[in-house]
Image 1: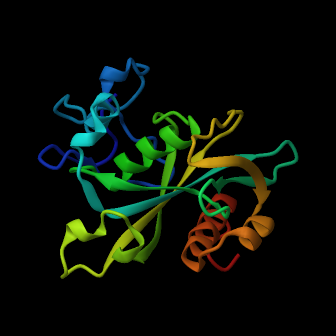
Image 2: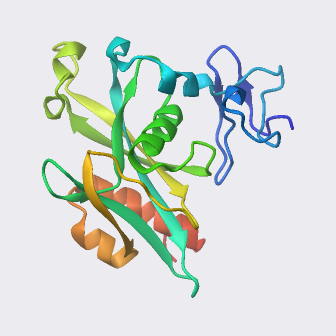
Length: 208
């Protein structure tokens, strides 16, 4: 199949549409139905990074946040939150970009590393963008003294009929209703991303 999005081979990106299944590197032995750019090149060659030595990677100045979601047998939507091992609060999947990754590449990689959800899953990029002070990050000093905040790009990912496998960064995970998830999420910006995702998945518009 050809990529249904508008591809740019010099930046190896695909412009997103809502609920679009984004293409991934064909070296993953992925199904033949995955999409490719018009010139036949891989639009997301990031999976090679999973096999490389992370000691050689540079922390990129952006953050991602991903909420796995599923629909229950009675049609309700639930969201998976993970409990941090270090500070003990509940959050979505979070992590930072590495080297020259694009946000969606980072979202796919971090989601796989922290939950076992495959990079071939359907990701939905949200309009919500938060900003985080550089002082929150161990490697923040590498970005110099002219950068004060970095953006946080937000996504949802379908996790229907999947068993989440947490990493050592978390102690447990649970499925929450939207209302219950909002009660335990710590940061307002993360709550905004969840609000947008919930509205989009229910398909009633921002005021519905």
